[in-house]
Image (cartoon, rainbow, N blue to C red; front, side, top):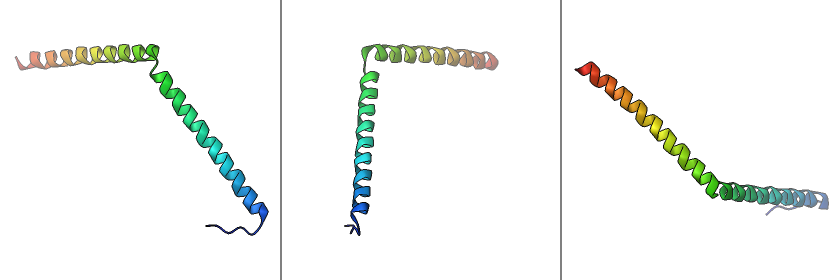
Length: 74
């Protein structure tokens, strides 16, 4: 435990702790809001649509590459 030599030191540390508490509270609120937004139906639909589109592009590219390799082996 820290020993303080003056009230000025104690006040300084109390102010720092209060500021840290406020920062932590804002971080929690920000995290909550980001989570809530990411779970919104609109955002979930965007995410699913983006994933389907990405997978379709990968599948299309893989099919072309595998077809090209197959043509070379014949």
